[in-house]
Length: 300
Image (cartoon, rainbow, N blue to C red; front, side, top):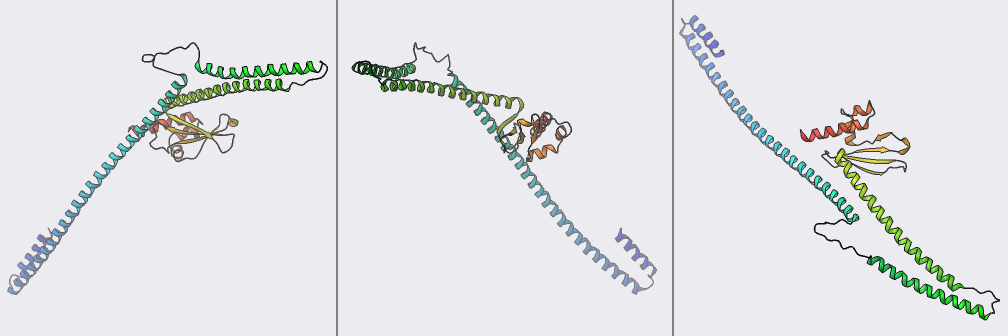
C-alpha cells in the first residue's frame, strides 16, 4: 500500500508537470531511486525473515530435545522408585520370614508330612547331666561317711568326754549344696533365655501386624531425658528413607504427645492435615490424612 501511494503521488506530479521535459526526467529518476530503495528494504526484510525462521527451527529442535530428556528423566525416576519400592517390599518380606523362622525355631517346628518324630522314653541330655552330677553326689556321700566314721573313732578314743569338731563333713555338705545351686542356676538361665527369645518374637510379630494394618513402621528409642520416649514413624507410602515423623512422649504427661521438627513434619503441618492437630488436637486424624496424602502422591 505504501508503494502504491508513493507511485500515485509521483504520477500526480508527473501529470501536473508533464508540459516540461526536464520535470519528466526528474520524476523518472526519483521513481527509480525509490524503487531501488524499496527493493533493498525488501531484500533486508527477506534476510531477516530467513534468520528468524532458522532461529525458530533451532528453538523447536531444542524444545524437542529438552522434552525428550525430561521424559527420559521421568522414566528413569519411575524405574528407580519402583526398584526402591520392590527392594523395600523384599526387605519387609525377608524380615517377616526371619521373624517367622525365629518363632518356628523357638517352638521346634517341623513338617509333619516329611519328618517323623521319635519320642524317646528318656532325654539323653538329662540322663548325661544326671550321671555327671550323680557321680559327684556319690563321691560326696562317700567322703561324708568317711568323715563321720573318723569323727566317731576320734570320739571313742577320747572316751566320749571331749568335744570333737567335724570340719570335713560340713565342708562336704557345703560342696553338695553348691553343686545343687549350680544346677538350679543353669536351669534358671535356660528359662530366662527362652523367655527373652519368646518375648522378642512376640514383639517382632506385633510390629509386623501394626505395619500391615496401619501402614506405619514405628521404632522406639530413649529420649534425651530418662522419662521420655522417642517414636520414629515411617509410612509404607514414603518415597525416601528420610521421610519420617518423630514424636516425643513422656508417661508423666499421659495423653500429651509432641511432634518433633523434621522436614516431613514441617511440610505436612502446613498442609490440610495440620488442621486436625491445631484445631481439634487429633493425632489419629492427622496420621490418617498423612496416609491418604502419601497414597495419592504415589498413585496419581
